[in-house]
Image (cartoon, rainbow, N blue to C red; front, side, top):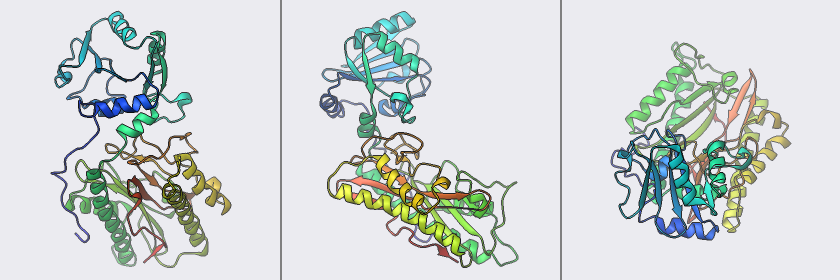
Length: 408
């Protein structure tokens, strides 16, 4: 395809997981944070951080704990009938087995009594993507004599960061996604006056075929929506319910994809099939300028080696749209974490609306920036790019992101 990319089948996964090699850096981080340890808990795969950090070979259906101490060897508390997933647990590390709840709680108390431990817990549910441990388990750990604090910064530093190889995979995907997004809008425009105009669903299908031909994968989507349908940020056409794309429509194309085992690229492109109205141009400019305000804040802070929080970036974008008179129509966060495993990840989000994101955007994390304005039953517009904080500064993808409405 035009602007194509190499297939990703040979891309090697490079996640940070608990291992003999990663343990020293984990323990250094615990020491800097004045923590006695990181207590990782899971049941039935409900905690993706546990699943990702431990890299277990198989699903567990019983509760387990893994304690990573500031000094010494990690300890796993595992159920007696589920030893298979722990086959690769280093023999020099301790592993306890339990069958009864009494043994589980006794072993836990032995590990954590009197200690200050981090868990996937967000006080007041401030950040739901971090709040993965049930309240009852937190009570159990506290009753065992431990002080529980949030593992938020550990998750950012060890679960959410990209490797250089993952960054490269994202940049390749971003170039391909940008090409496909723009081609899709031009294709819709070229067919708008014909005897066979495209529907939202048929254009969505065309995009999926382009992904497959380019060696890209996506879990669902993309979103293809004309004006009134685009006013619903999570609209997706179906074979049974899909509008015809006609001359005069504002067209939103939100598409995301990755190489196999790579990091997602997530973008939104806006087109006008014919000259846009003055009102539509005004909305587009508000959305575009809000996106650029977020990027400018990041560039200024990161370039000056100053800390910046996801919530601050959300505020910068939201202020622009509010001043333009559309504040009540921008009702979602400005952006979400993109981590090596998930499109909507567990790292810092660009959010001070839906959640209280107070984590710093640290080197190695990626995220979307996607302000929008949605007038019910009328029109919706969004502009989405991705950001990554590298050792060389702020990376925005795609490199040639949208500056004006794409008028066909």
